[in-house]
Length: 126
Image (cartoon, rainbow, N blue to C red; front, side, top):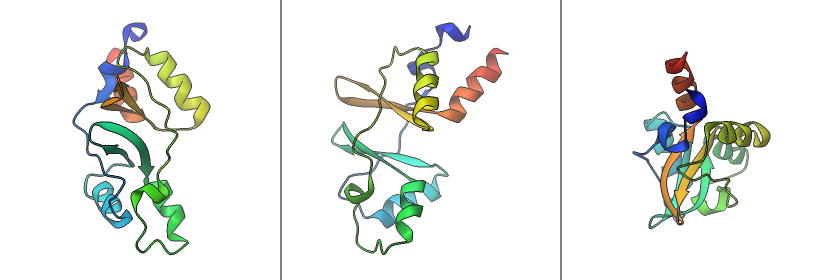
């Protein structure tokens, strides 16, 4: 049942990521093209931040012209490990008002838990 569901069971493993050196316009294009609301920011395989459509929309009210992803990304990212229980993930999402949580192990980004994947899993169990 749901008590047995872990991050590894609901994470998206085939990730689209972006470099901190990428231009904001490129990150925006990736999110639009793939219909996603946020991107993990990585250097090599190491997670260094996360950037969302909300970050970009907020920045548009200012001139974002040549800004890079590193200028807008959230650097302090809440993460979970593959064995983190679904209940803990939901608590983190609700308490922090976030829709996605990176899954990492030994500093390496393995996947991303997004709220709609959790809803799909709950629907399958019902």
